[in-house]
Image (cartoon, rainbow, N blue to C red):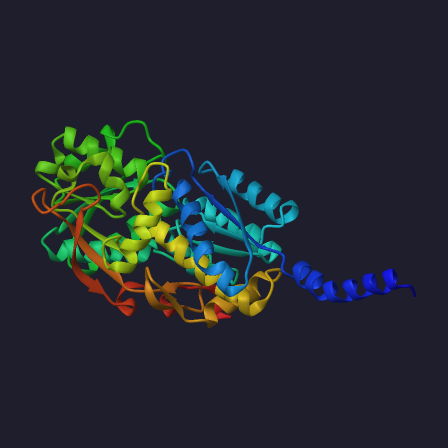
Length: 402
């Protein structure tokens, strides 16, 4: 062996462990799927991608978990969402699908992921059936669900004197589940549900539904819809003068709704949320970074915060497991590690996939109290995790029963 051959051999021996490590460290590939252009674009949209990337910036290097993020618009259509998920899993090497507002789409994607044994984390998805009758060992439900929000608002407003309710509801899984959970809480608190009207997603005209609510004479008009549909319902209700005689309850109203509506339009509103950007130094620091990166300079809502926290926790699980080929194994690792982040604090993930953390009742600030843009809410009370979320034995999750 000549000197040149010997040097090449030494170099190859030195580099081979590094090459092996580089090959082993295939990036964790996350697909963020949501509504990028329509009724839920402000609720999630590009903001969810930004939040996930901020988590990667903060945790990827420290944990030694390289991450690649891609995104797609499911257009609020289950067949399109399922098709994207199948292509991502079969051809795009995607390991985890995240966000998934529109519960009908989320359920379609979860079915594909369960078939392929891939992981799914819902931050924008709302329906509580996803940890109930439609649960999957491949799924974590991170930010909120229709049980927690519907139950909390229904109980609070009924106890405040709203004894009779009429619902205007988005006519798909999310809206129906939100209405059902809120209605159950209203009746449990001694109230009565007088009726409901259901509208298609991204409805063009809410007048007929509002006229039914007005004619019902209900104390409270419960709005079991979200995003642009919720904004348009509230705007039309003010045009009809409904808000002057009946209380409007946006069951999933949040900070991203208010710029379009104006703070005056939502005076005396009570909301339930697991996150508000102005809670503490940690939430404010995240909100400042998020707003600087967002093309519309929005503050984050709870679902954006959920994307950040869930992505951080996913990377912690990936660091322990070392791979994402087995979706159930990755989700089980997420469940085994206590959750802890600057936005939600300490928490846990229950065996059925439900992420547990406190919820907060917030009231809108008066115009005099608000110090400017995005300063919309003040804390009323804290709901402990054990009181906020549906009990495990009441969910009906099949694999828990088994």
